[in-house]
Amino acid sequence: MNSSLSIQLWKGHQCAMKDEWENPDFAIQWDQTALQINPTRAEELDLLVRLLEEMYQEGATILDLGISSGLVEALLFARLPHAWVVGVDSSSVMLGLAAQRLAAFEKRCTLLAHDFTDIESLVVPKRRYQIVISVQSLHHVPHHKKQAIFQFVADLLAPAGLFLLIDRIALDGTHFADMYRAMWKRLEEGSESESGTSSDDFLLRLQDKEDYPASLEEHLGWLRLAGLSATCLHLHLHRALIAGKKKSDEAVVSGERL
Image (cartoon, rainbow, N blue to C red; front, side, top):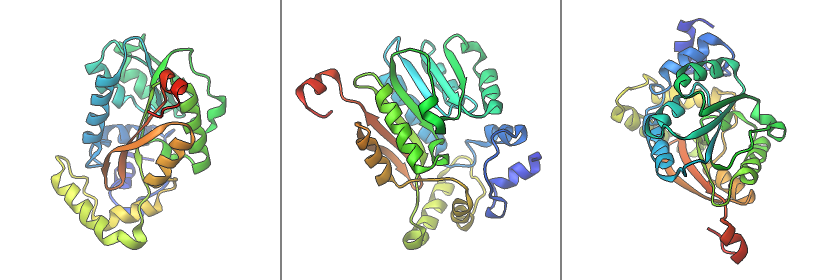
């Protein structure tokens, strides 16, 4: 895919297709435009990094499922230069971009190539994983595999550990399309960098995407089934910041749910 086609991918539903993460042109174009194609992404990333800054415990490790090109980690290390991170991604191209971006922190950031849709075979370094994050990755995964990932995260987290998930959620276009269009227009008008996508193209592109978004209610339910307390911290139309929290040792003993 050449650059002009990659640009068109974000501009209209007529070019919608499966994301090509092993295509260098596609990956580079995505890396350069990630904050432009979604009017709420910058705010969501700022909220996420602020949470990491406030919640991170010295010496613990953050696991990123779907580290992509390392954009989140660049923001994170700017505020927490002594954090430890393990990043997993299935795309060798994206991991290459991440390695370049995070070269100054190579001793603190371990990059692993693995398709986490096969989460059962993922082996991560032995660390105390206080926080797991995933940003705009799990909507590419079928629902039953998402549930397996949630269970993996719940099992891996240290007591009182956190799972912070930013992802696209499913919309009910059958009943609320007009309201979604109005909301998209409002988000575009209030954004510092408009995507150029019309409200009609916004809805059509979501319908054409070959992925598996789940509803907010499904996300929260699956996290609770995995044994985590769950809540939505931030929601803008089709993007949500969701938190899951593991019980502390004290809660397990007392039977309380935190």
